[in-house]
Every structure is written in C-alpha cells, then in structure tokens.
Length: 82
Image (tube, rainbow, N blue to C red; front, side, top):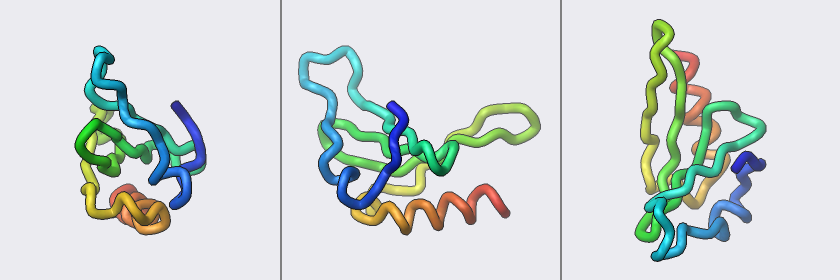
C-alpha cells in the first residue's frame, strides 16, 4: 500500500485484523522508494528493501523509530549511501 509516510499517519495506520491471513502489513513510502513501515498486531518496525549484486535484501531499522518518520528517512538514506 504505497503512501507518503508522515509522523501523523504512521501512528494511525491500521494493523491487520486478527482473522486476517496476513500477520503483518507493509506500508511503502512513495517518496523514498524502498522504505516501508511494517505493522503487525503487536509492533511497528521500519524496513528498507534494496539490492546488492542483483539480489534483493531487507534490513530492519527497528521499531524504536516508529514515532519519527523523519528519523527513519534519514536512516534510510544512510543505509543506501554507505
């Protein structure tokens, strides 16, 4: 579900319902390609999807950043530009 992830909407994005087949939902940012917020019934975590030598990789930035979309965007930039 692509959208612009902001501090306001990150806190209000719905978790999957308990009767859903999926245990988590990834909300992809449309501004920073590869950045997403993974929401489950118990927590929220920022993830980055990128490629190395043609292989897809995923890095979890951590759930402590879920209150700060700007912090996650900064960390995202650091990960991709190392």
